[in-house]
Image (tube, rainbow, N blue to C red; front, side):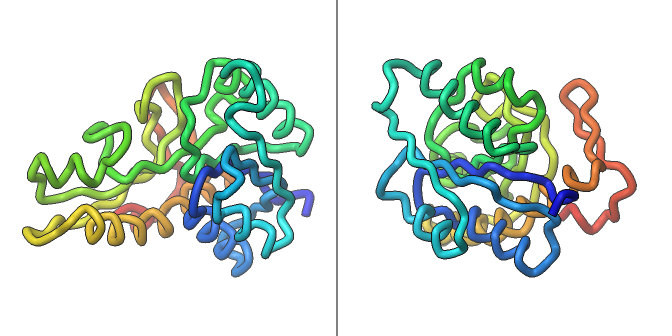
Length: 211
């Protein structure tokens, strides 16, 4: 257990990426352990997923503290108390303050349902459809003070069809999210990620980790 990467996963909703990470851990393709799941939504289905796998859950509601900085300070304390080495955002619907970012420099990952830097922010799939792109996809990146502007770790492309709706495109992108997010975490666990400026260099990795 000592050599497993200790994860803290932050969720607000369904938690399908949380489930994918759990599944990869349980089948042995991800050498990590989830020490804590934190949700800012008491109704998040991801809480049920975590409890099913006997993962400790902390609920910290948006209104529990008087301002964003105090909220993030409590998040940091909870994660530090649980020995977290990498923070995973899995549909966590909050903008993190510098208080949080400075506590975990280059140790916060997020996944976004578009090929960044295109279509940052919410509804990336809808933005892609409205723009008329032929290729969309998803991006795993480190979190910085911007909105979906941090260094890119892995991306995966998905074809956009003429008859796609936001829902059909989102479903195909989600399958790729479930594939590449655990890959990115495993690369971190293996010490294969190096950040130079805004570029992420991946050491000694097979080319088929990218599509």
